[in-house]
Length: 214
Length: 349
Image 1 (cartoon, chains in turn brown, green):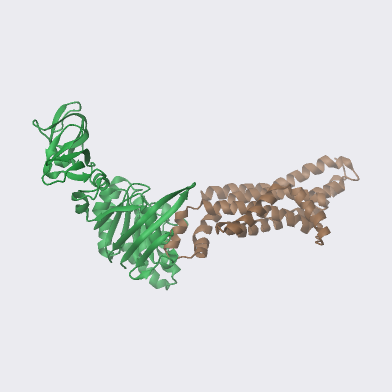
Image 2 (cartoon, helix red, strand yellow):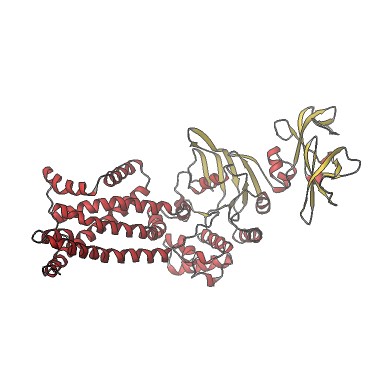
């Protein structure tokens, strides 16, 4: 075993892992919050708002995530908007996650039988009350499994941030191998395990929740 | 409770490019505390009509009046209706108690008052108090509909709207709940619109019955009136089972002559093309009968039996005392005094 491995791994864990978690977690929050707001907006069935949200969702889902990240980090400064590396990665990954989250929320809301909200309206509830007391409580359960797999994708995709200089797991590995290329294989295998250890609990939680809720 | 009046309700929607008339000039008057059943084949507009009364759908024209208040422009939550759906539409994430308490809670009534009215309503619908903490998925179909009724009635709505509440249940339960609905109506005195495609349900529950077809009301009347004096051939065939047999023919010189086969005397009928209708109970098998045919099938329902007789004239359903064999040649005698006569276009003469 290369004696440089353990100090290198220590740096990967101490410096890289928190950054990967920070970028992933912040992006998840944006994905959920943005997805809920835009998904509920879609449920309003207002043609003008629909058009705006559809355009947002389709554009963000239609371009490669890496291109989006480059756009935020290298493109926006030319328009006078400067973001450091980590916020740039979070903005790009969060906006991409929110687009996917919108589709998850919209799908879950529309999967609740229309009779449910009509029964609420007939009982004397306004649109907002029907949404918050009848539709969303039921729809939230159906959103959990697809959101879990979106979270897994977000963790995986956070490694793209290395390409705009975010010092996440992958970037720290790349820095460590600059002096010693023999570290490539052991360090890559190490971060494979780390990614797996982050994602596996999410998958397990998803399966559990799916079983409990269906 | 309120008197419900509908005046000239019309509604069109587009299927592809062609306009579909869901409702055409529907006018109705339901007295306070009355049950009006609306019956018709699927797609006749009966459910759409109910949704217009509830405010879940908008009509293009016409007015909806609860007592003297025009409610056509009000959203459903401000109309004060109780609605029971074919598939109960109970909230799966709430207990039975919470389901029933839902309407009163939305009205911000005090917790104690809510509890009293929920228990009262559950008792009235014979929902066992022990079921209240349970969830809808733990209940049978019949119990669910009782809960749905309790949920609809607990707020004491101006009008109770029932959209095929029994059709998702099995036959025995349907009959049981049908009697329950009659009892509940007597107990609450709710002004009720009851939509069904089952004519026996409509006749049994409606003090009056409206028969709908293609978005129009073909006839409104007491069950007996619809049965004895159908306004047209559609109502004649839709009300009563088995359906009335209809024969085209002409009336001349005081006799109706069917275009194929037989004739009988009709006193005082104006001459011209006509349709004669006979119910299964208006005809019988008799050796000297004027109509001859072959028994195609026999339906033995226990209490009564019907023979389906094929001949030149088409098919005639005959109520029989002793069941003939399929394939047997028989003679059928009509009771001319029971004949229902219609114009060639189907209107009652």
